[in-house]
Image (tube, rainbow, N blue to C red):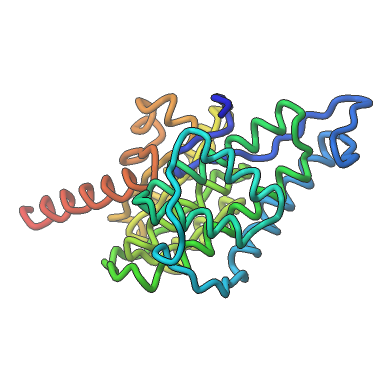
Length: 299
């Protein structure tokens, strides 16, 4: 397993690898995918990540009827993410889901599947593209299959997970103009499993986020930021959200690569707290809301 550290890739739930165009004049990648202009690549990346992938996740329904007890167990180790990546590269959706069931049968917690398997698998794919080992098309389509796999897994396991705890409504979004959606969708699954009514807005505009909050107020908002280039934009968005009467008691959390590297900037951007993954996000938000409720009762 190759150990990599990509700036745009994070195993936390707020951010994940985007297929970043790196045009090289005259270069031809595998499958004869020619690198075009940066604008062409960015348009294709935006189309796949903010258009095709979310629609796949919203419309795809799995007919699989397997459970983790129906398959032979396999052990999880450092090479497991690469194994899964190679399965999705071969377009074997059923085999990929069955492989995860084998891991669950070995005792791997479902949370670890999301945090320790799916996110590192996406990182492996991103590294393969950055090193010219995989084409842009191969990586983007493999990521779409990985996201579809995540939704299939959540759907097929939901009947066995009888742990519905109403949490309220939460809005999850990237900062406008950012296209990192894989981690955001993983975070969506964590909150849905915790009983939240989630509105996930990948690749949305500032107006979309404000309109969503005005139309149906949320108890919490989660925003993702990958670089400092849009820090001021996020700060302005949070300030605008804070000014809404509908957001008077709304908890705002932030995440993504920027806050992993700069946790001390949470208050500066106007948020309440940050989290590095889905489990921590849920734990923090429950603790924060419990503390707020206690203060409210005492006042």
